Image (cartoon, rainbow, N blue to C red):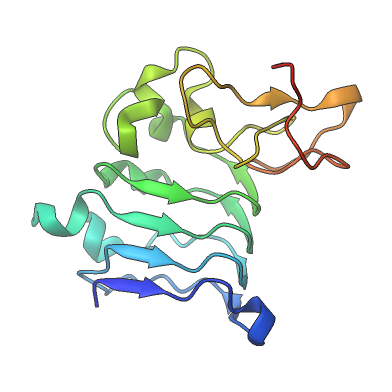
Length: 171
């Protein structure tokens, strides 16, 4: 199995329960489980066989979209093993983006993490108290914006309370 797209099942009784680890899915390269009702932490074994593969076709440039679920906790530091990862975790309850993921090497697609001099983790998810329309910084010149009027979210990649669109002024 190389591609698994089961996004948007929430309206049909959808997928709920813990996020599967897919630890033995050696060739799964494109995973979209967005807009479901998955809960819990991301296992340290998540896509482990893919991350540890010696075959570049398996471990390089995977796409993982787990946005808009109810996933909690931190992003595993072992995701540092990926090369060119595209990940979307916006709209969950992520509490930590490990610093090792925010260094200047090549884990993330378009290498935006390495291009940002301030707040490089914003290329993965906007930090608590900041937001963007998509939950992360997508361009060097378009930053995550500070939540207005002292509002904040305790999670990464979330909109500010009572905020549905981007402010005109960066924070």
